[in-house]
Length: 145
Image 1 (cartoon, rainbow, N blue to C red):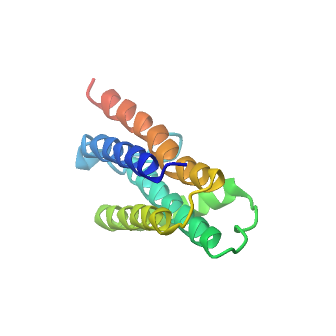
Image 2: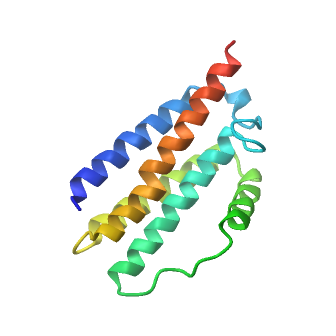
């Protein structure tokens, strides 16, 4: 897969996500309801967590190590969301940016970007950002009515 194309798509999706959450007034960023039980802050934390996770996966692939074992992804998502609730907005943003940076750095460090690596990267960054961007935009629009 073309590394530059993947990084370009990720950058566009990340910029859209940032634009979406920047469009939510500060006093609404911790209001649940973007998706059931989750706020804008929760979703940004979630996206950062999964970007960091895929950075780990890509680092493992590069080192010839196995991917982390399958697990109860819903339970993990609940745990991640709960962990983020105690964080400040600024801490969530910093962590999300770190996760994103790790994913991008891991992709850049790969000698060869296999289809599997490209798919992992796209699933946990581009596709994930786009999914939650749409939800955040809808939430922001609903609050302006």
